[in-house]
Length: 311
Ligand code: KIV
Image (cartoon, rainbow, N blue to C red; front, side, top):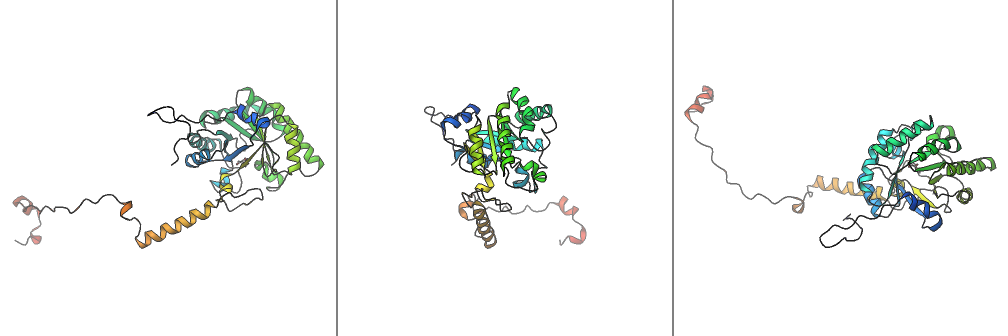
């Protein structure tokens, strides 16, 4: 069902793997299109489905702290957890480029800390690039990571790791001063060598201005249609995470409803003993020839306590 796509490489041989989406491919989309379709993924099965569906980039976002682990914010997520999920996603991503989020406090301390942890994500997490939240203040961190040959996707606007400083998950870049700061942030990250910039929850006209002001693709989430690509959390896109329903999170399916309905049907059939049916069971053995028990020997009889012996 989820067999490899790609073209057949000849009689009897499995189809060739599809060509991987690379960082240069992603950069080229700014000029040539089509818009980049990025989505988060956290495990092998989902990654394989999203990859087969044609997603260009799979992001192992620290949103996993909320949608996988059930925390109210992304702050508790660790480098080890991102790497664990990254290895699973990498096994399912035949075509899509796989990006790993650098968790809270894994890069903010210094450019060296950022470089060391970016290296851990690449080695232990099987990622092909890393993503960092922040603006001008982390441009030097980005520069150091990029200089080591690790591609960096930047992320500005609503940066969920700063949720407490922002006073909640709120639209950013409102007003002249805030908008100008975000444009400066984007330009600083572009100059530092980021290959793409995620713009989260900012007004669409500001996202267009930033998109025009930088040389690399912008990937929007709640930033309008004028970006060079879009990203969504997979559970939002599939209608599986009811706790937060941001305006921008279009539900392309109601998989959550389908999971609950399927579970109700399963429970009903288990309780009615209509599942499993014959088609879900193995071939019966047929009637068994019961071997009559052997006559007890004198030795056995001797072991039986006398008050149990009837003869
Ligand atoms: O962690 C995440 O999933 C993200 C995306 C929403 C961009 O950063």
